[in-house]
Image 1: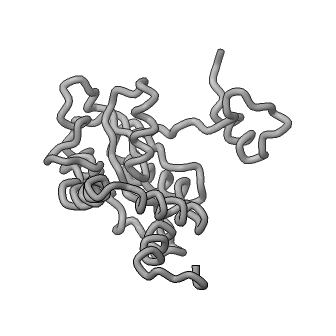
Image 2 (image 1 turned 30 degrees about the vertical axis):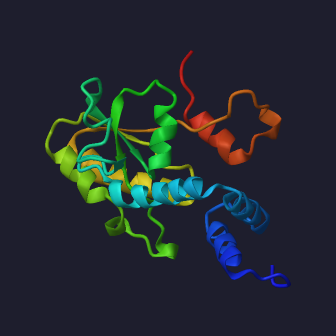
Length: 200
């Protein structure tokens, strides 16, 4: 956009481009879309961003996003509070929640251990998880970190901390996606599928 530089438009494109997964073409499309909004629609859009920043905080129990002291899961009467599913970020909790199969609670770490990126255990919400477990109401912790080097390292670290406390520590099974062919499945996924096989 150097040849035709309208400063406010350029700044808007740059802001969209700074979002994860948004390239320059998509950023331009979003910027032009925003310019096509009415003044009241644009104000509503900006207000939603400001509201989210000002009103959303971390749940005092599970560290997930919340607009109150407790998130909807932690203030529910219909959850199994003896079971905690540990995830890396709020999006992961939503993905599990959308299955409508899991009835326990969550704990959001807000990241994974990654020494190369300067993220150690102290940068994550691990102390809060250990404090929850120490209260004695939890019987199982499900490690649901991502199947990446960082996610696996975080899962192993948590397992070493939690097992001595005498609670059941499980890991989400990883394997072959439904509807896929074995011949197109990579070796790591096949190995995980073999390790996590179950009796029929």
